[in-house]
Length: 145
Image (tube, rainbow, N blue to C red; front, side, top):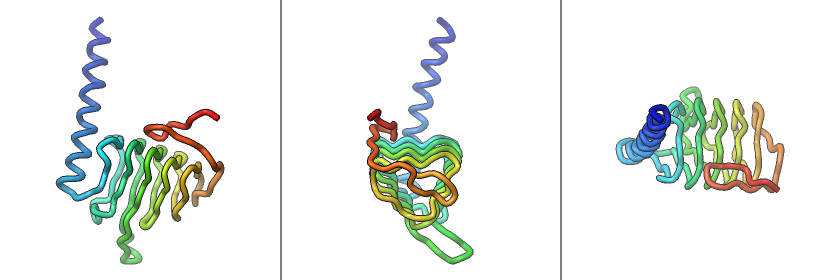
């Protein structure tokens, strides 16, 4: 009983912190993150060009995923846009200028160097389409065929 109560409190506290983080990222840093998106506390967002971060409704960024909106070696600042109901896997990297359509899944450890259309799964370094015509629900969860 005590462990169950502790777990319930832990889950509610985590959801509160995740929501609070999105509010701070939007209001203080000027990012454009939908309130229904979820971002792991260990995800990395670029604060050099924070106004260039766009994350759509119902999308999820897993731990270690990184969004870069600048490249100092090329003196480049370009926005990164993630559509609705996308899933960005653990330790994936999205480089400046990338735009992902709605319902895109990015595999863990992938390096996304270019934009991709909606309803695809991309993996690899550099990321390539491995499956098309997929459907995802909230948080980028793949719907079974």
